[in-house]
Length: 316
Image 1 (cartoon, rainbow, N blue to C red):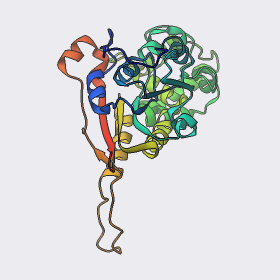
Image 2: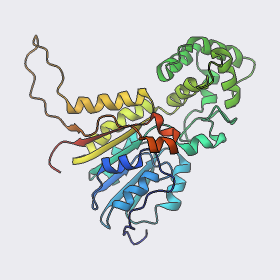
Image 3: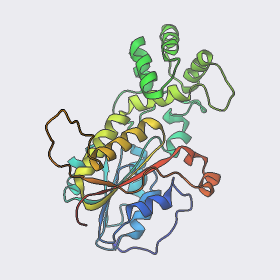
Image 4: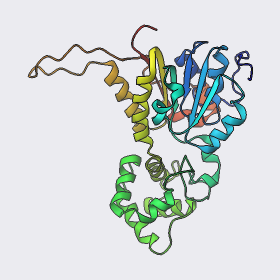
């Protein structure tokens, strides 16, 4: 609100994934400074803001221009809120974060609003332009990449980011078919991939892994995650909390390994000279947290979510 004071704490009507666990993990201080690097539609951000007092600060970032527009309409009248359009990988370059942070939240992957709008091109269940960019103001669309990428590059992307076992066969078919008809629609691409993979038992769409892989590549999601984790680590004050929600094993592995690298001494090698004493810069607060049964009944999207929380070493 414009006067910078907080209303009584409220639970969002439509809960974002693992809302309570995120609020508990961040342990928001009323006068703290917090950064939500993946604003989306602001469910987690609202929870943080409701816990801040008049001296608290909330910094909001998102790649998606639609998310930024939503934040401008619903959050920036509050004097405690600052907004920046961009990737959380670049949070260290935002002067508002330069004074240090008491908490950072990253809710990874594609958001429900992005999936629900066919024109964004993320969903193989709805026909739309084959875009897949989270930031539609820059970069190459999925259609543009598929039109010129080599067969090897396509296969590598499908395997590395989607763990698609039929990556080479799919890539070969895509390159052959695009010579006659370029891929410009999501339904067109999904149908082609399904023709290669087969329909299986119907529980998982045959294009799931390929769409995931192309989306991750187009948006540099894993590279941004690695950069964003390091930036968050460096900006956190002692006692500050990092909370990361991931939705597939590639993301979670990066988060898990980053926290472990900062929290645990590496295995020693008796053949090497003794190393300097290890001083952890993070403490693993939570391990891997999963959504509870009640949440899963209300929100099936939460079934693959994993939350990890770490705390910056030092005196709070």
